Image (tube, rainbow, N blue to C red):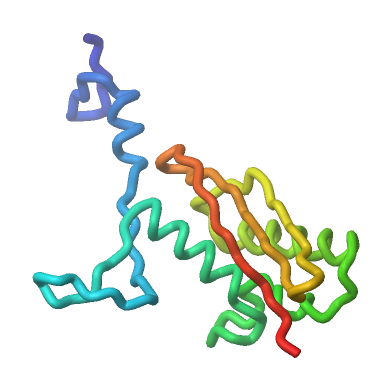
Length: 149
């Protein structure tokens, strides 16, 4: 194997494999359902894919001005619930979701966003499909946006 000479040190081995391994970072997040571990009696944290999925979900359900020091952080989807049901509202929902994820969640790439109108129940069912960059896995988040009258 050919080594790479950098100053006083010589690096040898499979450098491509080292680059791939060094990019993977463990992600942890707090599960907001606060499930208790049966043995440790502590809150079970979310790890890796579940943590990223939870972060995307929390970002999407956040409205503007709900986070201290991050007034513009969120998708502000509840603000669109009282707009007339139609194609324009679906486009606005899709644009808000895509913009929010691209701006505030650099760990994922949005693949597609499916929006279903349920007029009888005054709700939207939103499915966001995305790829987690560091793990190369595909995941999705489902949101039910409901108007209460």
